[in-house]
Image (tube, rainbow, N blue to C red):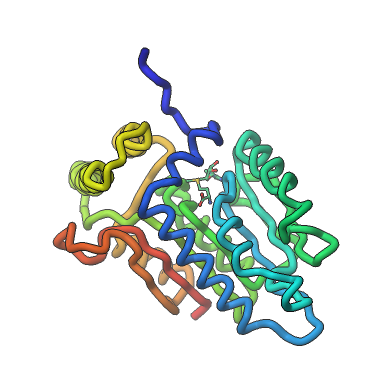
Length: 270
Ligand SMILES: C[S@@+](CC[C@H](N)C(=O)[O-])C[C@H]1O[C@@H](n2cnc3c(N)ncnc32)[C@H](O)[C@@H]1O
C-alpha cells in the first residue's frame, strides 16, 4: 500500500518530520537563545518576556523552552505570554491539546505566570495587540510564498519592540539564480540529508517524509526555501541587522558552500 505522507494539515505526521537530526538541533539552539535573552531581560518582581510565535504549527519548540523555565526555583518565570499564530486549524488544535494536557505538571500554566494562547490567522497579515520582546519564526519564512516573504518580514519587524529580537530557524539551500538552479540546490540539500539519515541508521518513514519535503519544494507547493544570501538580503531590506548566527547542521563539510544547512539566526532592528 502506498502511504500518503502529505504532512500539510496532518499534525501527527508533521511531528515525525521534525524528529530528525537537523530540525531537532534548531529547536534546541533556538530555545537556548530565547532563554538566554529572557534571562538577560529578567528584572526582579517583573514578568518574563512576551513571545509571538509566527507559523507555530504544533509548536514542538515549547518543550525545549520548558526545560529552561523552572518557576519553582526562581519564583519568576522567564516567559510571560507566548502567542502562537498559525493558518492550520488542525495544527493549532493539536498544539492546544498537547500543551493543555501538560498544564497540570509543566510550566505553561496561567497560575504560575506563563500564559499560552493560540490564534488561527495568516501570519502575513496578523496584527498582535502589542509589540513583543521576541518573535519566533521557526521553519516559518520558508512556508511563506516567495512573493509574500518581504511582507512577512515587514510584519515581523513592525511587531517587535525596538530592543526586541527575532529568532529564525531556517533550512538554507545553495545559491541559485533561477528556478532550475533552485531545483538543483534543494535536491542536493535533501539528497545529502537523506544520505546522512541512512548513515545514522534511520530506516523508518522519516526518510519518506523528507522525500515528501523535497517533492513539495519541486512542486512549488507549501515549502519555498531560499539561499542564505537571499534571506540576508530580504532581512536587510526590511530593516533588520544580524545579531547572531548559529549553523547547527551539518557538522561536517557536506556542502562546498558553508552557508548551506540549518541555521538559527538572530536579528534585531537596525
Ligand atoms: C514547518 S511548520 C513549522 C511549525 C513550527 N514553527 C516548528 O518549528 O515546528 C510550518 C507551519 O507554517 C504554517 N503556515 C504556513 N503558511 C502560513 C501562513 N501564511 N500563516 C500562518 N501559518 C502558516 C503551517 O500551517 C505550519 O504549521
